[in-house]
Image (cartoon, rainbow over all chains, first blue to last red; front, side, top):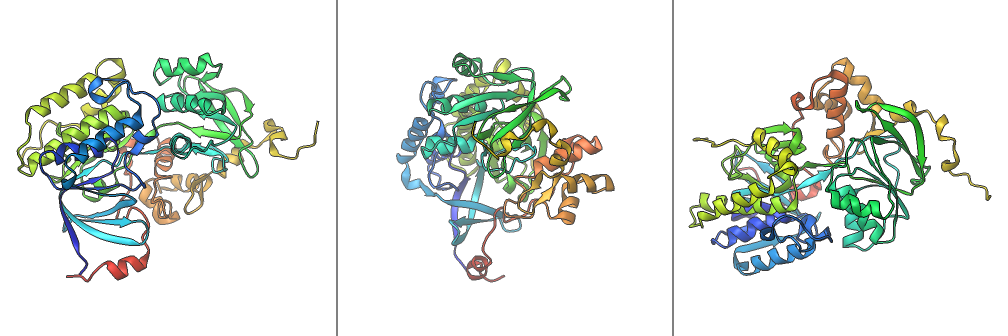
Length: 367
Length: 111
């Protein structure tokens, strides 16, 4: 029989949410194991070269990759409680015995038996189906960010960006900072989805943002050599004449969808909530799912942004520690909830508030 | 002007977009096209799992991470059923491929 590794809390995903949860729970003395499938911790934070907005409590004004360092430093204070495995993916949960299997690299496979599990697995990029979308040169925006901001490689010379949400706008600007030309930014909706400041930055540099436009096809034989775009009406039907755009990269920033396969395997109650961008677990305000040992935080719970993911991580870390019977700072619940509420206030938070209305329950009762 | 044979010089207005759309590879792991998906949905294979059993979509290395969303939307477009009401398919471990030798050598015995 191979050895089964025991741990109080297993955190799957070492990004904004997972690291925040680890920092919080480690401070109460919980023994934590963090699994991170990438080669290093930090998740999406390490790719964010821009300064964050939001509140000072979530490091507004600090660049994303530096925020990761701040949280890691906090974990360092309780490092005897935290064991980290990078290049390691949780690959399965078996609900009959509560065993999680994990794969380290491709050559090592082991089992864990945690008391509590946090799924902080983040999101995956959506791709949209259009002819030739499998040509080399079609990228997800996250992949472009990884290439440029982590590895220092530009994806090409001239990019057609699809999607004018925050990711599309920010990545367009970062590409321009790296000397790459942006042919245009397309957006199917009649308005820009991202923050006005991000849009204004690239408009000032002369990049056209084409609203009510979609990509109809990528052109090219072996690699992307151009794209065909077309206008849409209010019902998203194609109108007018198709137009050709010269580009060697097509970058898709068309949204993310929560990654949470293990929650399905655990039999958690899941719900499709379009405002949260996909299937998400039903959870209470302390982020516990319908499975008494599973918590969720960050994009895996619904697509939002990193500041919210960090606070959700804190709340989940607090709640899992409490469920383990550890003495916690009860007042932190109120403090963190207040910060979350303030991030979700106003027009910008409306979609999230509406989505949470469908995904969140008040209390699991005796379940 | 120098001669160029690349497809950027093709008169794109003459392209057969409908045919091109048929050829979109929806499930890249198993190389299943949009045409195949659209052929089987009206025949009653209108959930992800039924298409999976028939065409092997979502059974490759990525385990449906690339195609599940697209297929659910396609089912919704063709049947008029909203995505939230279409069963999204069973997800089983492992979520990524594991070498058989690893489970054989390290998996331990059944108790």
